[in-house]
Amino acid sequence: MSGKSIIHRRPHIIDTKRICVSSKRQITIPQKYFEKLNIGDEVECLMTDSEIIIRPVRQDTEFAEEILKDLIARGFQGDQLLTEFKNYRAKIRPAIKRIIEEAKQAAEQFDGTDTMKEIFLDSED
Image (cartoon, rainbow, N blue to C red):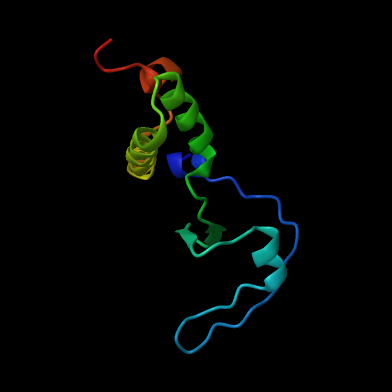
């Protein structure tokens, strides 16, 4: 069994709709899908061996509250708080991309014989 099959899980299908692809390879996302998924200005396309998955790009707002709590606890206020918040928020997306890339590399190298300890143990330990 390859590592890729372990990571890819088929989502539960709620609805299906056949849509046309234009001569410029463009598609139109059905309005009810657009609204239900709260799609903003961007979507992310993922390709598997046989599928294209289109999903909304979530803004970094999931982490905003935690960042603000931490910065306030550290004593930042006013303009300084805003500046520090922007600096931290700018670091989130690159960090997540690095984590995803590391996970992909680990999945590609997975041969099914590694133990959990070998996978998650720091190389320095």
